[in-house]
Amino acid sequence: MKRNESVEDYLETILMLRERNGLVRSIDIARQLDYSKPSISRAMGLLREKNYIVMDREGWITLTDEGYEMARRIYDRHQLLTTWLTALGVTPETAAEDACRIEHDISDETFEKLKDHIGLHKG
Image 1: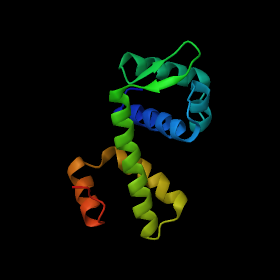
Image 2: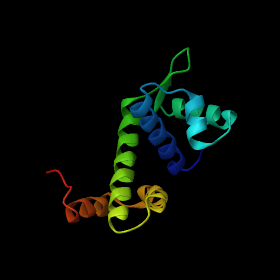
Image 3: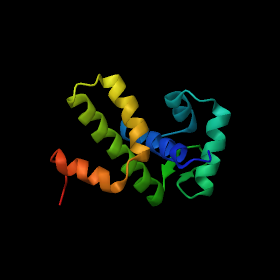
Image 4: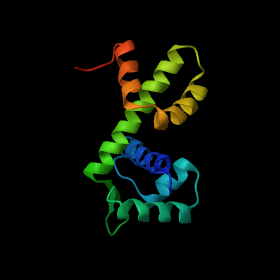
């Protein structure tokens, strides 16, 4: 989990699962990402070390404020990019896959200009 992209993917997945199910455990993340339980366990340990998540005794995972901010940022990008690409005629599956790749690399400046262009900028 050396790349920031991996961190963002894990945090985004935790946020998505939390919004869908209310509570999140490591097994939920493993199933969602189709990763092994040991891989998820290691990743969750690293996310705890970075203070992005906390885990209680029962294994329930909660995003810290810092983890939530990063997850929300990447999740919002993913949703907007998927919607935009789909509106351009890209199939929903391809749009979601491409959005996942783009969301990590697009600059804040370009993302803000994209939001302005499609009329979604708040402010």
